[in-house]
Length: 484
Ligand SMILES: *[C@@H]1O[C@H](CO)[C@@H](O)[C@H](O)[C@H]1NC(C)=O
Ligand SMILES: *[C@@H]1O[C@H](CO)[C@@H](O)[C@H](O)[C@H]1NC(C)=O
Ligand SMILES: *[C@@H]1O[C@H](CO)[C@@H](O)[C@H](O)[C@H]1NC(C)=O
Ligand SMILES: *[C@@H]1O[C@H](CO)[C@@H](O)[C@H](O)[C@H]1NC(C)=O
Ligand SMILES: *[C@@H]1O[C@H](CO)[C@@H](O)[C@H](O)[C@H]1NC(C)=O
Ligand SMILES: *[C@@H]1O[C@H](CO)[C@@H](O)[C@H](O)[C@H]1NC(C)=O
Image 1 (cartoon, rainbow, N blue to C red):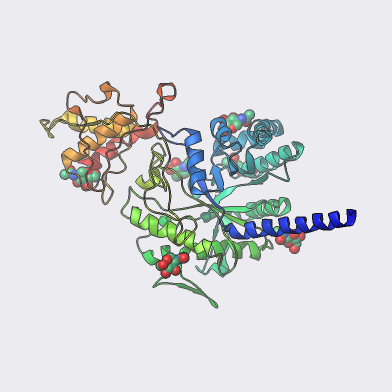
Image 2 (spheres, helix red, strand yellow):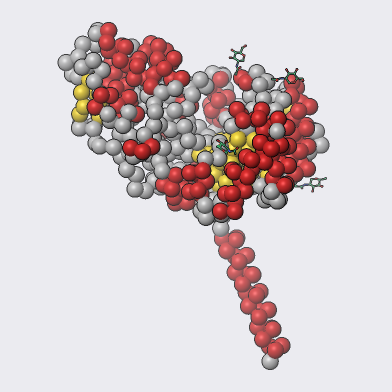
């Protein structure tokens, strides 16, 4: 009897195992992540965003800090999390083990015990960018070590890995051939120290790869080489022909790792994406072409020539951020695959190929259905018009105005109205924000035309009303010169 029961139990166990394996196989080895930035004047509630992630099948999310509200909403979501440490905290974290222990206790341990699936701590964000002039060269690695020691002390080092997202400018190839890749000469020693650390802790090398920036920075860059449909200017590297810049860039890193004896350190693509507005090459059409091409490419599982197999990646980004610095360019506020309100910008299948496309955020609450525009009777020659536009665009977002942007086709009055509305919505439709010395008026007729959307902001509730502005004001004069 007992033997029969044991046999039955064994058979059941085998069946369960087979079932589990079948389920694993049925689930696509997709695991696509996304970057969730929060520099918005009117952020959607964190719970709404988490449901948006779940509805769309994002398995992983990368954050730029460790806000309580966001981590709280991710609790029990099944979504893996990379928390981030802003660059301005690196010096303090490098200087003191106690500071790192406090950071880990507050921003990792507590949340992990609460059921947030934190897998990585990103120490700094692209700290070795050349535009930072070496500011973070001395503090990044000591900060990583202190965070690692704090995780060990907290008993979390097996589950939570320490890494640093780096811009692809930390490696390069002197010949342009990926196989000649190596780390940047000015930081070569530091890079080896960091890679040695990653290898010894089992953490991945996180690299941000931006074909759009290659195109933006170099008007001779072959457009089709940025995408994934084959190129008229492929790069031939020995027996390998690279048809797209993503593969070539990725393999330049693989070669750099191999050359220095770390050929098996895993690679995570921390940011990859394409913006939709604010520049002639930033359009929904190109963004869809790039992102869908990328997703289909990695869904095939073929990997890159030097690293066949799955590619682990986080799209950049989830939602547009109207308060990001536009120092890199006006496109900077338009990287989202969703608009500010969680509406998809274009059909995108995360599974690659013909899978279901992005779904919008649910139950979004908007402000009233009204806009602020220039009075039809206003005289454009009035000095107050220019001053008002300058003021509005200094405090709100006017990056959809400009050559070959979504609102580039507006006439002069349309330009002014766009600026007025942007400010009015940013200020939560406050009546006083639609005056502009008597030049403005509200309307319930949607002024949107063609590709140009006059937005209605979302209702964030009186309690969390944002303060608009910041460094934006200094850009007002520049914006003014663009609008007229
Ligand atoms: C936890 O992270 C937040 C957000 O990045 C930061 O403001 C805060 O200082 C951190 N807490 C500690 C104790 O370091
Ligand atoms: C880096 O140096 C350049 C040139 O000296 C300067 O214009 C820029 O403001 C500096 N950037 C930072 C982040 O210090
Ligand atoms: C980094 O350390 C070097 C050597 O001690 C020093 O010369 C340099 O000024 C430091 N850089 C910064 C940004 O603190
Ligand atoms: C990488 O290689 C080293 C030594 O060859 C080995 O000990 C380690 O387990 C390898 N790691 C991975 C992730 O394959
Ligand atoms: C998508 O569907 C088209 C037409 O049915 C088919 O030719 C193509 O191979 C499919 N693509 C993928 C990646 O499944
Ligand atoms: C409106 O603004 C756009 C973007 O700055 C500009 O290209 C265009 O010339 C302006 N139109 C008129 C009629 O001023």
